[in-house]
Length: 418
Ligand SMILES: Cc1ncc(COP(=O)(O)O)c(C=O)c1O
View 1: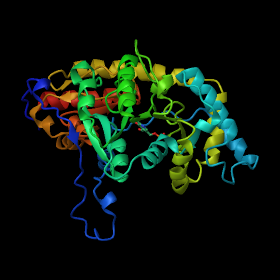
View 2: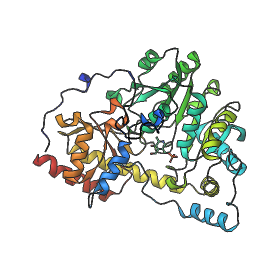
View 3: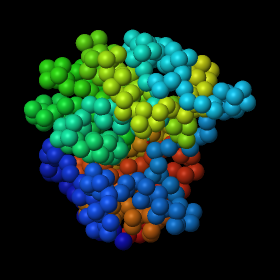
View 4: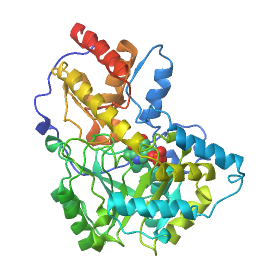
């Protein structure tokens, strides 16, 4: 059981800029065979929690950032007819089917205020492959990449696997995990090559404001840095927040790679389809990394993506409506556990990142494993999102009302009895 000792103040935690290194699996027997690049990576805490959760019957599952809805019918139907019409048996252009890129260019103009031509677009295997290929194309061994933190753990690993150095710059928790512009300026060294962020954020649900992103753009232009964005949750912003794409600033055209996905917007996780936009000169270089990893994005998914963009958009509004009401429910249930968690109401994504107020929360991995074993609630330890995430856990509200209530009913009993 947990000992209830309150950590008195968030501000007492020392939040330093961290040149991050992972220790990986140093005790692996066949370490002579496996590359140092891969060996240094730790196993993903998210996947570890999923594995442990499977061992527990009737678990209340709040640890996945995956839409629980199915892909809308008209998108599935378009994929089925593409199969029937014999369109999916071969490769497409490496950069993606022209009709899809035309649709993407229209969407970028309409929703992101980014002027794009099809030669500035690369269709990728989800946002993840777009981000990975961009990092491979832009980062040399030893180059530093600034990541406002806590941040999506995959971004950190993508930098490490390219032999780059992640520089984790803490965000300001008291201001709903806003960017710390001054700290970012201080983190720049002659080795800094890029700044990589996701907004809306995984894991905090923060939406970086236009004003802050304009300040970030000034820094990037002054030091000639690339900005790599992950805008996976672009449509899921709530209250008075709005999503701003930094590539919409005309001066930034040559300094940004913007990565997007169909995964979240249209509940298409398993289709593995996304895209990126950047300057025309950079696209062929990123394509040189994309081809050896993927050749092209799955063709069947490209046809599904065309249907997603050409079809009606009411599914996106429905998902958003569901997420906002699940967010409100989760916040309300967290209010009932205010001696255990302190939270910032997320303005975007479908994730939130409460601080654990109990002494046991200082080690978020042990805390989350105990919570899973003893209360049958699956969450993700904050340390999975970098050292600045320690002392927190990530909760996902892209689940049903029943799931949230089940998890919080259990936690209420558990914490009140402990
Ligand atoms: C911030 C962020 N980017 C990217 C992804 C994955 O995107 P995709 O499925 O398009 O590769 C996730 C999934 O959880 C995410 O949270």
